[in-house]
Image 1 (spheres, one colour):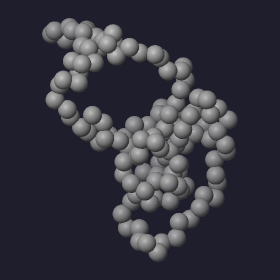
Image 2 (cartoon, one colour; image 1 turned 120 degrees about the vertical axis):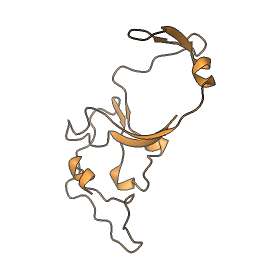
Image 3 (tube, helix red, strand yellow; image 1 turned 90 degrees about the vertical axis):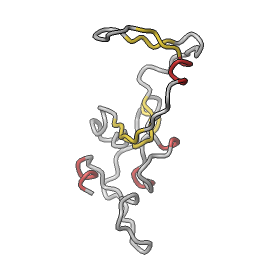
Image 4 (cartoon, helix red, strand yellow; image 1 turned 30 degrees about the horizontal axis):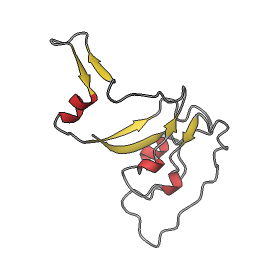
Length: 128
């Protein structure tokens, strides 16, 4: 619960050990105000729905500051340059052909809790 305190979250902690089936979930006493910019802050984590360590993809926060670019997967390239011994340009197919590695990691928006209505810009995922 200390982690939730740091995030200034006052919701239940369904995903944390020690909860029994007969425990009562205490509702928010100080609900955050409604999101006034749903076209920018498209989706936030709903803390009252947290029931697992990993955030389901359809509950992960979505922020659109500048819209979404239209990318052509065939033309897209990742440039690796700078202080590297071998600069290169990798295609999406190059990246997909490499050995898959997964890691569980938490991502938090740098603006999370910067506004009274924005406390759900955080999520845990298994990234590949």
